[in-house]
Length: 558
Image 1 (cartoon, helix red, strand yellow):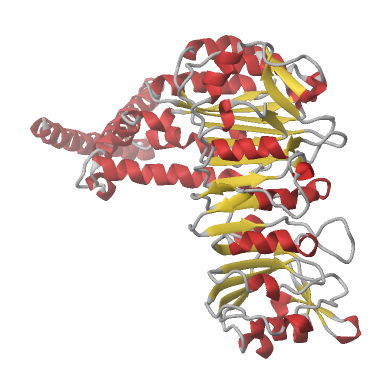
Image 2 (cartoon, rainbow, N blue to C red):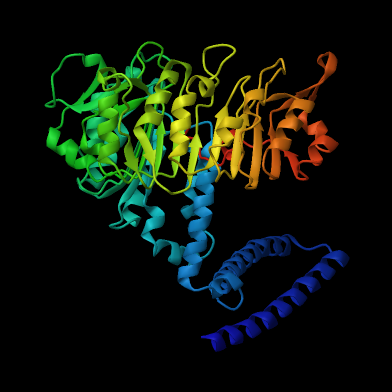
């Protein structure tokens, strides 16, 4: 084979040299003589012949390049074992998904999620390897829009076919003002009937004017129950007036229809569909609180939609307790709903509730808004972490009461909670209140993110009565001030009372000096009062969730 290539190459080289010499001779003749009409036509026809030769040589070049790219010796990356090569591609795909997290449109629209197609077009060897890995093709993006939805369906069918028997990761984006379901429901869903489903994610933007019951019915009735591990429902709407609970038409009464989204599927079918879920993220739309969807979870997010203006999602204490009890292995718990007290109201005076033990809990994110801020004490009462390091994010707001904050208002509950938790990362928002008492309760603290003070700059960082408190001497790896307005003298004095700080980070923070003069923290990185306390001082322009080390609970991040 290679001998034939060498022999043909030598013949081609000699023929091209002879052909070039002939062309050069014709050129010299035409310089000295006027060619006849017949000769001119013959020479002109030769251009077509040359173009044909060039096209043939281009094809030969492509074949040689494909051969080179397939070689382990000429392309270093091809020397990697198959398993390592696929692992690297998986990392690249994962980084692409990470890069999409701040995308303003639903993640389905971002072309970065088409990386497997890009890898498959690099060379023959890459294409063969990528096609041999069905998990690359198991992510299915669908969009219910008139403009873009049709383009997703052919690709979705092709990817589902290439994924073989792998469980599918299906993500659906809906915009009500462009809503269209015909193409997806008729051309795609029937083609994957009875396929195993690994995860299912919905991004619903302004969907109050679509028929939610039929929309969910077509997706929840098309799969083989027993395989779903992850469910995400993210509903955002500025017009919708309620946060609804998903329930079967044959489950419970039909009263209060505005609070329920009734799906025309048997109760047993829905429960079988929900039962294997391990990761459940619900934002603006939820599953009936008594469902087995909340059993055996390792991650649970119940976040309130910021677009609801009348009815905000509520859950009773007893329902919350039942959910936590049903998932003792929770590792991540994010909560932002309104808790309705029913157990606490019946307790005798002076008695306390018995919290639910969550030994595996690693992240507790209490993401409350002004209308749900009263839920904080109930969450802290009912959750009892184990001995594992805990990231605790208290509400990222100061609360609706001026000159106070949620930390001060809920100090007894926070105090009790911190005494039974091993908090290593803490995020708090406080207004005109000392937090020495709080720091004295977290001896294992490694990262502190805190929003301090008000625009006046009159922040009391240390109360006189707390000067005797002993703050643990362990090093704090990083301290980040968030949207803070500080006085240099009081802030430096407060820092000096803390354990050694590895890094001091300012995020959207300013300093206030005498006569109302302000300066951005970026201009004070070399201020001696700061450097004397912490030699590593910087300003960060990253997204806030990156600063505190946590993925945002919503916003097309799933």
